[in-house]
Length: 144
Picture 1 (cartoon, helix red, strand yellow):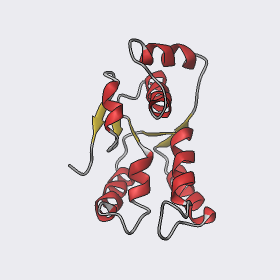
Picture 2 (cartoon, helix red, strand yellow; picture 1 turned 180 degrees about the horizontal axis):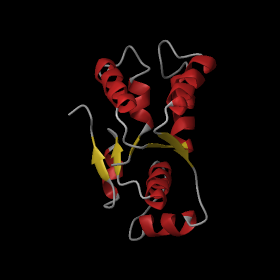
Picture 3 (cartoon, rainbow, N blue to C red; picture 1 turned 60 degrees about the horizontal axis):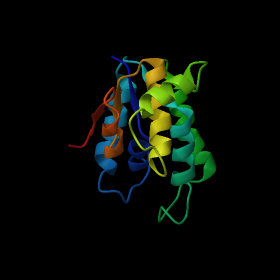
Picture 4 (cartoon, one colour; picture 1 turned 90 degrees about the horizontal axis):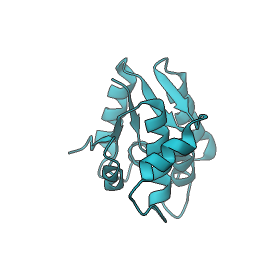
């Protein structure tokens, strides 16, 4: 069954100061060893690169080449796919946001949720509870 990861999972696995570091590294190791298709949104990749290299967020931020190397490792796995908006994206976005007031910090989550919807991906591993607002997604916290 296909799935996706939110940037927070990738960030925990890159931040040795995080209380979730060990669990995140173990979880990513499992993701890399299982054959189920893993879909990563480009928006997730760039959020990871922005946060993991930011000196105001990490006490010891990654260098750009380290962070990009982590993404290249993921990209090299045969079961990992990087996805972006297709021709039906705007319709998926509107359907995903129907009946909701999507603004501010919810906009990037709606973007990712809509990308997953367009690609038929129904499960995301995340600690971000905002994804629970999208009933078509099964949101799983891999650390609980």
